[in-house]
Amino acid sequence: MQATVKAEKIIVNILRLGSGLSVVLMTAGIGLFLARGNFGLGIPHVGFMGFRRALTGSLVLEPGPLMSLGIIVLLLTPFFRVVGTLVTFWLVEKDYKYALISLGVLVILTVSFFVPGIK
Image (cartoon, rainbow, N blue to C red; front, side, top):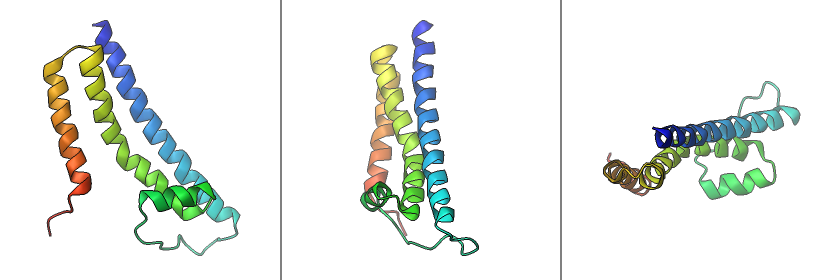
C-alpha cells in the first residue's frame, strides 16, 4: 500500500511539473510579445516549429519560440507520465505485469512520434 502512494505521488509530480512548466513558458512568451509593444497585432503566424528551433529561440527570449516550447512541453507531458509509470511499476511497486503493459504503451507512443500520420 505504501509503495502505491509513493508511485502515485511520483506520477502526479510529473504531471504537475509538465503542465506548470508549459504554463510558465507560454505566459513568458505572451508577456514578452506584449512587452515589445505588439498590442492589437495578434500573434504572428510562425508556422511549424520543431523542438530545436523552439529551444534555440527560447534561449534568446523570442516570444514565438517560447510559446511553441510551452506547447511542446505540454504535448510531451503524457509521454513522460508513461515513463514515470513504467519506472514506478518496475522499481517501486515491483509489479512487472503492469510494467510490461506500460512499456508497450511507451513503445506505441515513441513509434507514433516518428511515423507520419496516414492521409
